[in-house]
Image 1 (cartoon, rainbow, N blue to C red):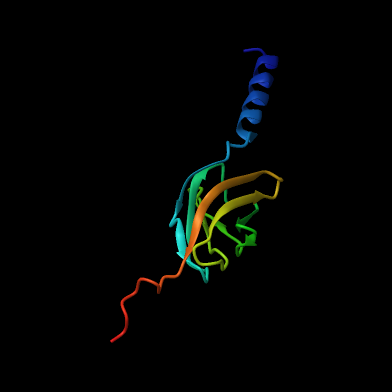
Image 2: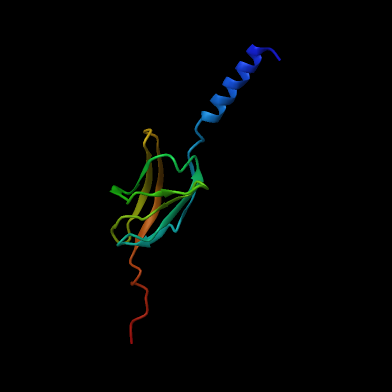
Length: 118
């Protein structure tokens, strides 16, 4: 192979490797949690890497800093919310990309259906 072909292939490989994967969410689990917040939620999808900085919002409320695992899952503790409220989950990346999942999380009162103490 000629030197120019090798250089072209090296540049093509570098560009292909540096492209960002498409952002997508395949699952949020659990999709509901206590109105006091704090129970971990796992967001599965593509385009998430442990080296990128992100902020996660549940409705208008900012969650504690999340953890992005090696497998691309985001684990985050939701902030407190209002009982019965279903909110959008929005992921904001440091590079200004955003991913909004409409009506993805519902705040519940976990004691509402609990049996009465005897």
